[in-house]
Image (tube, rainbow, N blue to C red):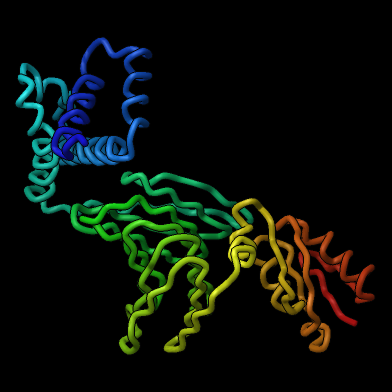
Length: 320
């Protein structure tokens, strides 16, 4: 197995070649093939490229007259043995600029609009899918990877890196992992929900919450936290899949009350469902719907359950 230092050196060599003269489409195909050949290749490439871009950007801020320095010129004329320290050189350059300017890299910001979802890749290879009306920030440092879920819901496929724990800060809860697949949802009322598809995560108090022991949850576990109260339940494969069906644009209602179903639809749509009858609000309903099919859902309530539907502008009022 190739050592991490050798992989870092190869990544640095590719970076220097790409930034030099004569880079062609064929070279790009070869680079893509090398990156996709192994997870370790991808991590090394993303880390070095990110640091180099940040270092060059900070250098330009410090000296507007400064021209970008090609990576190739920095590593020019190195022999084979020298490439083994090339990755370290790039990292040290970035760290030196950060320290000398007294600047800290700002977290990257991501956001989706109402009804929108999007998938993205972080620099460490972690993939994130953002659900409707979500705001997230991410900072990938040398010792720790931190994400702040300021609002909404996100699904994470975390790239394993034992040297850098992956932490999601969501209101009063902190979710810590090394490599796993899970979702975190933060509602406006302060409630936080974590669903684990695979792996193992630790959910601990953070921020204003100071009491309570961390909870360890694993595959198909669901944790709901509201204030100091924490509820952990084990789900079936199907129940976990249903809770994450939003990634396919679907809303699966598993014997929810009508009030709960309305809240779920309202997360995705400008038009809002209002259950104006307390008895109707407690009726149980199941089914699978497109997240934006709020009119179809209202018709089902009218035709299948005999409820009355009244449409007024952006409001759909439901009652007996």
